[in-house]
Length: 412
Image (tube, rainbow, N blue to C red; front, side, top):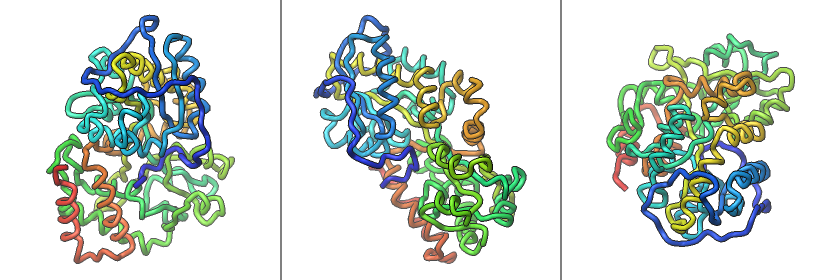
């Protein structure tokens, strides 16, 4: 089930190739190495999301200026990066040598042996150049398994002719002065209310199997808050919030940087963006939280040994400062590279500023990388949506939360 609301992966006809080469079979237990240009050759394949293919052509051309002896075949991911784990798992030997993947899938990929840890040199480079939270996002059991390039957290987008910057600092004020359109059937949107209430998902480190504390008074308080939104006249349930904003039926929505360009077109001069507001849970004002996701590129462990260094060089290059800036300019994805975040272009962008605030502790919780995350998504949706719709009654909250925690706490 696709629950990450990311760059659209619609359409199956776009296919691009920079050079021709098939991904070779054969597994390797070596680390993903950091390589110097001029000493590396080989043939590798690269998967990116459909809409990203055009600007990754530019990035690959830049790569080939530094690595002229490495041939790269660039194509769209079969079913989008949100389904990387499934696509790679079908036949790792036929999957791309380098592929885009959200960080919540890294644990399963690592445990399945589909990806190897980065080399010490590559780890050093990633740590030196990228934000600490993005480094944490690609680290599993103390080892780094991918090269980060984008931070993804949702924010509030609103019509500033109808709502002020002060209005959107509080959920109660926002929804009393305007209408916010959103989708409670997407647990990516509203499970993080559990974090605002004070619960943990797989522990503080996001890697503790028995560390989920949703079945507590804090979890019950979160479900009560969700249930209260059903009768909130300033909250609109919809599967297409963009249309509601465009029609004027809503003045604000919850969305991510992947839709920023569309939102600017819809709102024009009235376009504004802000971090999440505070919400009242259990009688206390708490910061509303979001999930923080890290988009990354990983190297397939089944890549031929002779092409492993070439694949590692590609993954490192397409996530460097220059490449991250291109991705930001073309798609609006917020860079993880510290120098790029500090550049005038990014630092002055209201969307980037809001996402960077949301990436701070207390505003978001890093997406766990546990192999149980697939089970989590399946279990969280009926719980969160059920509380909102009322199909899960208040008298059932404790029982439902106990069952939810038990289900996601089972070893795979």
